[in-house]
Image 1: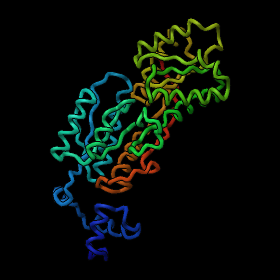
Image 2: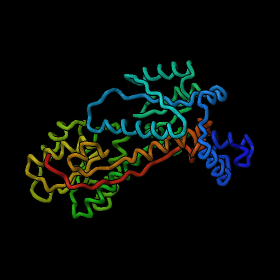
Image 3: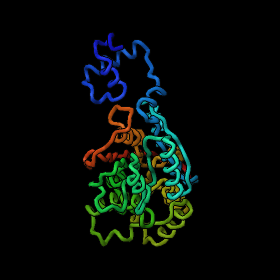
Image 4: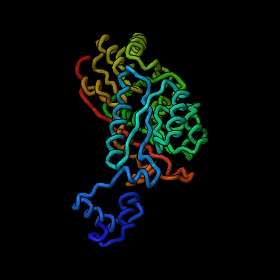
Length: 339
């Protein structure tokens, strides 16, 4: 291959293993020769030579029955697909809680089964990142390091969806349709993700009214359809009349479904509801929702770990400007069917 491409053997090796360090023209020429000759690298030999497993560890969250639980399944699928294209593998393991997951970290590192980890479901007081840093393990989180004083300045590698941008887009869409009394249905505190999505709604609504006028429009309950239906029904009974509510932005599709069921029961089907996560339920029922662009999240995850095109875990310097990816989600507008 080196002879056919007119380059050195080291250059071919660089194109295969660290393509980002090779000039674009040279890289493309070598890649064209590789494709023409049908060359496939010996992955087992590479693992022996580099002493890397070419494997990324990923913990499946405990089984959840929620409507929005499919988000992590779709993310894992996108991550696996893109990792495979780079010659990497995803090793999936399970744990019931953070303590048990840390035990899995220890086992996988002791047996040299993985080169890095991808963590999900980050939260305030999460012990996992600290344990991995203490043991010198590479990792990236899908989710910000909630609870840190300076999230944007954190050297921790993280990729996340801009929940504030998503709920702000939902709110602006309803305003453009003529709505003015727009409620936000979210989760109880503390919830970093929930607060992020709440902040997008709040920032847009504060452009229209004073802070004191928002209190009655902020609703919260557990992420359960029945709880959301019950809460919205209670709020509807408190309304003085038409015009008191003309839109609801929700922190999840689970909450959106509960809100819609309450609106339908009250014969208020004209009030629009927008969910978050673009779940299969929202697609089936025609509920407008915020899509998290999980293909982009997976791409950002691998770029942080491997570089733009590489297939080996990079050793990162503590540089916050290169440590984060904040993905802008997309509003999907639908005309809903009956619920």
